[in-house]
Image (tube, rainbow, N blue to C red; front, side, top):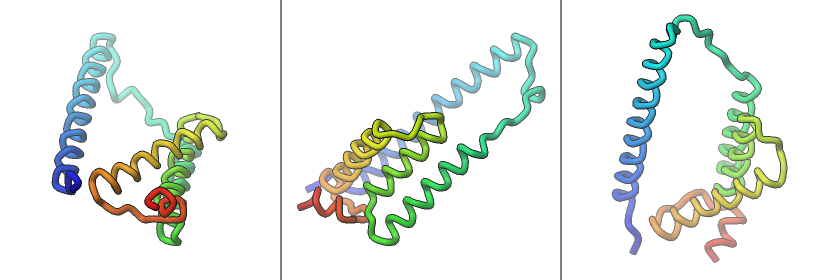
Length: 130
């Protein structure tokens, strides 16, 4: 018997709340430091990275297509991981693919075995659950 979906949602909510609190503390500290230095946020120009955004959106599109057409969660999420790593400046390579494959496989196994929840299964997931 797994922990169940209700416990998972509480864990996620606590994790997101902790991240929000940490982000607020970090932002407040930065604002105080910048005010002490005479810098105001209005002086900052917004910067965007269109290529990085395109990599992440492309990875999300591949994840959606992979789930929809039966490729499964692990392969789609690995592509999303690699695309996100590329968007943040990591070169494409076996290292990114390996890390993404290990992490997404662990997430899949955690959801499937520990929480008894189902994620979209493809050929790789069927091998893991066999």
